[in-house]
Image (cartoon, rainbow, N blue to C red; front, side):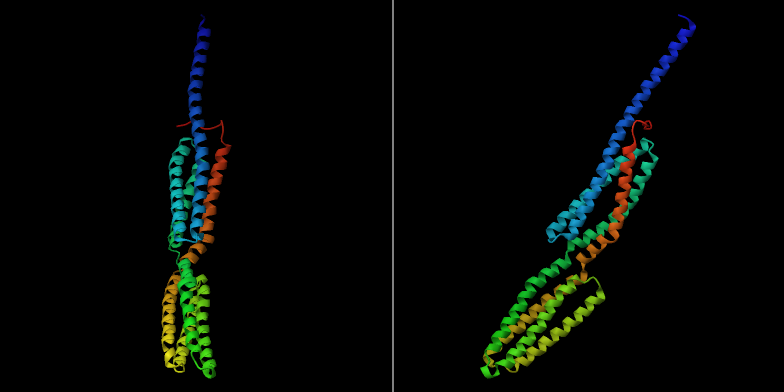
Length: 295
């Protein structure tokens, strides 16, 4: 065999060996790229699921549902972190600098999102506005109705010639309580502290009017009707005790605050996170056989 032929054969062998080694690197890189694409897609799904679950926790109408959705949101965010922990080193190993930068930006944004979301979920599961509403429509309404019934019985015991005066006083007292009851709803929904204070001033004035009218009624009803008037006073006391609970819960405003944070601050951070993830997914989708070797 001539020297030239031997040299040519050696050169071909070296090229083939190098090609075989390169092929192995490319296959590994392609496998890692496929995994990276899957992870980026799953990352977006996990994040979207976390945001949706958090929104459902805010909008839930029971404590149980709020807690369940909050747990779902927390679990999905844990899935996001796991995907990030796997995807980050994978992108570095592929020398994907642009994609690594996008993932890093997402991690920063996600940190802000998570801190805000935890605040929102803590507020949402308290459900103070929802609890105040239930008290208003339940025990408070029942006490107000008992107050009305006791007043009507007491006024009805009056002689016909004097009944009109007692009935007018009873109607005035009931109107004052119904005004308090009617203002509870706006108070529960009100996000502004100053506006709530103004509503409370009106409520206190109505309570004072109801108690003053009760005192006037006590001066005109006959002795046999006094027990029913005492029942009315007890019902008013119960109504005002429940009312105090309603105001305390409403003042915490956790449902209103969690919804406001979700619609404003969280919405902006959520969009920023989702934009980074979509850009990462789209950039990886463009990668193909021109990948860098796996390190």
